[in-house]
Image (cartoon, rainbow, N blue to C red; front, side, top):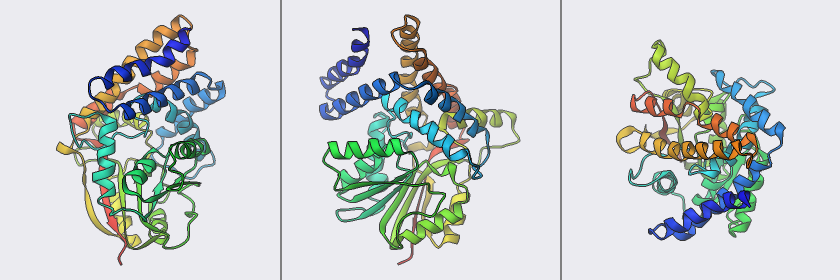
Length: 356
């Protein structure tokens, strides 16, 4: 009975919020997604928990090198992370640019995907779009439903691809969505000049050879097509010789699931060498900061952690629930501090175009 009450609690909260004017359909979607994620986390095999915790060793590295265990560590990380994030407001696994400070993470994600990406890429009905590193496919789903385009997602975690396709079928969007297994560090499994647009959202930290990857993106795009990157970068205020800055970097990388900490030029220079023309290269957040949204996301997970501490103490939930959420939220305050200091951002956006 106690477990059933726990699983139903998001629904009760959503119904209450709906009475305050929040869209009921959206609220129900978020509640049902949270319930499904909680059920999945409850039954995680011990090995999945161990592999997830071990995967954090990857974030001690400065670059992905192509080592035999790196790709598997990435899979082990996201295979668990996607369910943890789905309990809260970050199912899409990224903090978006601040588009409207009065709204939450999820709503700002939707706004940015529509105004900041779909419209800037000129995506519409009939467009063929590639989502590189698509995760659970929720960004692809919204891009397709908003624009009428057909979106193909590429990802190296088969469990997330299965989740993405199940959701596409459930929502009758399967004719507008397809999902392909693959590692973007390998040649992209698509013919030349296939896509009208391409985007990626905070996935390039795992790139082994950015220029090689960007040449592949150039190859699969049609002449005149645009791409959008939204990613994690270091900003000019960051000084690697400053012990405080270095300490924040060490703490922030595991929060973000980051390995490589590039400068914007580490993207734009190889993009230009690959043949692209840079159209936009700037922080997409209003005011140049994300901390209002970071704090909103962290507030939920901190509250969840206190609840989990109580429920695991009385053995209503297995101990791994608390272990996973403590690892997920560790040092989140460092991300807020670094953002306020202007050291890093995950909302740097680049728009580039392949010549017609």
